[in-house]
Amino acid sequence: MSRVTVKKFIVAVLLALNLLTDGAGRAWSQAASTTTPAFQLPEMLGPLTANPNPLSSEIEDFGKIYLTGAVSGLAQWQTNPESDDSTTQVDLSNAQIFVQKPEGFLQFFVETGFYSQPILGTAYVNAINTISDLWGPVPLAFIALAPTPDWSIEVGKLSALPGLEQTFTFQNMNIERGLLWNQSNSVNRGVQVNHSIGPCALALSWNDGFYSDRFSWLSGSLDWNVDSSDTLTLSGAGNAGTTIISHPATPLFQNNSEMFNLDYSHTSGPWAVMPYLQYTYVPRTPRIGLMHYGSTYGAAMLASYTFDSGSKFLGLGMAGVSLPLRLEYISSTGSVSDGAPNLLYGAGSAAWSVTFTPTYQYKRFFSRAEFSFVGANHTAAGAAFGPHGNDTTQTRVLLEWGFLF
Image 1 (cartoon, helix red, strand yellow):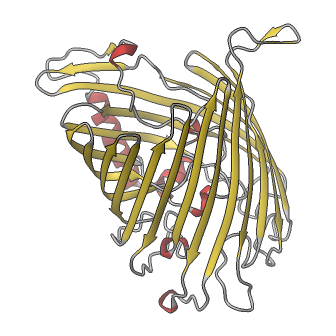
Image 2 (cartoon, one colour):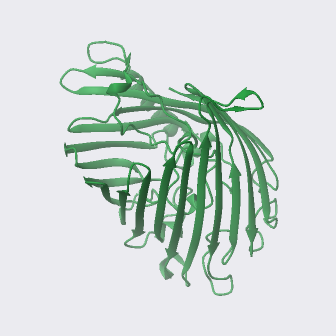
Image 3 (cartoon, helix red, strand yellow):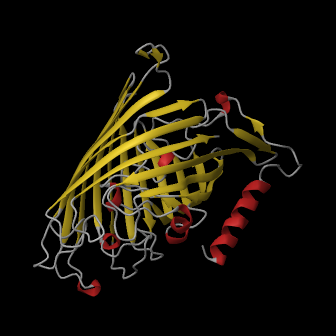
């Protein structure tokens, strides 16, 4: 980690710790669940649940501020690692705190700390290098103005609108992000307008796409809460210009792409089922050396079953146990001969995956194991798995443990 990154992280932590007391020196207190806002961030896809009674502090003439966080570690074993990867990994997956004011006219959210990004089918990058390569020690931070309950405007480092899966491990059903997630952006800098009307919620954002620091992206989403159990979401985003920036957080082709997602979420008793479709398109762009368009088509199914407090298996209580499963398929167009971009494992390649993540949560503590398998087809030489990039499968076993406070 560079000295600049370390300095930024230390400053961010000191600022967050300074908020542990208000201006009069009063300490944070445990908030009653009845006073906790329903829209508390970060968003949790499940089955892990956030602290329903977070620490809070009331500041006179300003409002209530909430403090939450996530601390977790992981261990990973895999087959066919890439040449710059290893068979085993042990790392810190999260050491983050979240400070937020989600009520009133003036609102804010700040997320700071360490994080890693385990992603299916890609080499693992440890937490220290991840924060240096991606979004820094403060990955999300924004101020929001909410003149009415139905309208708000956010400015800062925001979560990207397209896509179903969230950015950090604890937010999702699975430890690793999926194959489809790797085609979409996660964090961007910009401005976002939100409006809700009846069962619908709309959002529109002007931003820098894949964290390019070039503000040429337009993103939008429409959520329709069909009923208390079903939600349908249509989202899209695209670069209105051409951006030549290339960085680990800013892949050249994806940052000049357009993407569209159709997500559906259904909950019923112990079940949560979330299928979604994804399409991405990269136009012919001679300015970045791309002489042929490329696109990807993907489909995924996420599902989870959570046992209730009275459930037993072989005489053992199953309270707190969940069984998330993810299935994916993604294909890309074009070929090496026609100059199409490599958006997966070579132009025209395809891949599928299965990920199973048995999870146990007791109050704020959690542990989970994960088995994943990725199979790739029509790969280009040197673009897939293994030290030479010519293997077409990869199996992983992961463990993650931690707590959410």
